[in-house]
Image (cartoon, rainbow, N blue to C red; front, side, top):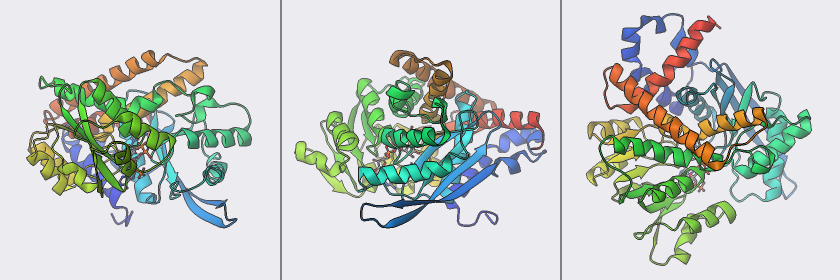
Length: 434
Ligand code: NDP
């Protein structure tokens, strides 16, 4: 805390991991030696840079760009870019730190990184988004490459932004290094099923948790927060598995549709027209719109999938969900539950799928995109989706087994943290003190 003042999100992420490593250290003191933990919480490199751009009125704006290259023990740095006004060093470091363990859990050779900017894409014209994104990549291009650091999308960075960034990277560096970014369009090296991967993966993970208790999505009532990339495809897969999704949100408010959210309307509003979720009720008069996001968790549901942003479920919301009989939580977003909320869920025996495990499907398919780029070949949608499904089942199994082995049966927070940690720590030991 002394060394990283004012970085509350980063402290929160580190605290969660370190606490769950207690039984590992007790069993294997070697992880306390060699500075493993001290090295793990210090990024290999943190890059901060100026991003100047000219808006449509001819005024010069300056944003701040970040890339944290957190840990490359098991492969090139890998992790998304977030464009949101709340982005700062703490947010980027918590995301990069978490990403290291998540990427390890996927079983693929990818290290942890993250980046982004405090640029707010909302209300910006196409030209402004392009000029900002090109300026951002002009600096970032000095630090990334298909074998060193491979960014992708995150909040505020979707196919459009990745396309502009790839164009600018290509213009600066020449050649055609498709593997430098993932989440690319299908016309220029993207992978089928990457768009769907995080949302689908989260639902596959929750499905494994439900199956362990003889339950399923079929006939369940689900609440999903957010209406972005992760949310949309979590809704789609949950509905395919027989659930009714009754609510979703954006940063202004949420819609409740007792008959089930119409996903085509949400997709058009958010993906094509880039409008607010409040407009949903204009087309579905039986649905209701509520200003503010927090109360979405007061809606009774069997399964809650927080897919918007960090700390969106606090202790009050967690108690509400438990009182309303929630059975399972699947974290589609990164760190959407506070530490207090997680305790409440675990103490109430709610099935809890932590972000590191439950939302790892996105980066897993990003690694499959890198593999396809290297092979100069593409797999069909079903091939990628099948591999994703298998990866999510493995992550679930490895988390369950680690939780069991280290004395916390059923606690997937501890299980995922330990399973992710061991591979990175053993690799760091093998590489010596670097
Ligand atoms: P998008 O930008 O596509 O969507 C984000 C959604 O969350 C939007 O509906 C947005 O509303 C809402 N939101 C964003 N910030 C806030 C906030 N501060 N309060 C309330 N709502 C907010 O992002 P993604 O779907 O890609 O990402 C969502 C989460 O999933 C993030 O935590 C991200 O780190 C995580 N994630 C994403 C992966 C991916 O593959 N995309 C992979 C793994 C994790 P609005 O439209 O109003 O901004």
